[in-house]
Image (cartoon, rainbow, N blue to C red; front, side, top):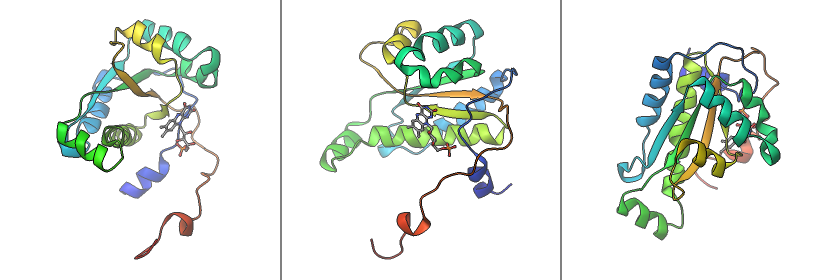
Length: 180
Ligand SMILES: Cc1cc2nc3c(=O)[nH]c(=O)nc-3n(C[C@H](O)[C@H](O)[C@H](O)COP(=O)(O)O)c2cc1C
């Protein structure tokens, strides 16, 4: 499979079969994330892997209910990986301020993509989740209140192999050469 084929084959998976994911495969996924580029090589992340069945269930029940119910499908997921942002290097923080951007969040987005593509190569489906009860997650996992959980990634073996066609913006709208 070429890299582009791998990229195109990745879809957000919201339905998983009952198989669990081997710890070593989860470790490969976070290893791919750990090798992501980051501004000034700050590596401003911490990945918390949840593969304990009881803990996973507590999380699914508490952090994805109520107003977060649209993500209730995560109850079927075999594992979660939480991505917590950590301190950037001063140069990356200052550069971000001067450029009016947030390099830390960009870094974390890139790391998440490394992770989900690595999972895809292993046949593991993923869904990046930005909509969850952060307060409850922090309480369950003893994450300090001062920390920010940027994203949660749900992982599991996909139940389906066919997905509806991807709705992509027109290429001309998002790509140009040599001018805006
Ligand atoms: C930052 C971010 C947050 C997301 N949050 C959610 C979410 O809370 N629930 C969900 O079902 N999908 C979520 N998604 C998945 C997107 O809906 C999905 O990537 C998009 O619709 C494109 O579909 P595809 O991943 O199958 O290509 C999120 C994706 C990203 C990148």
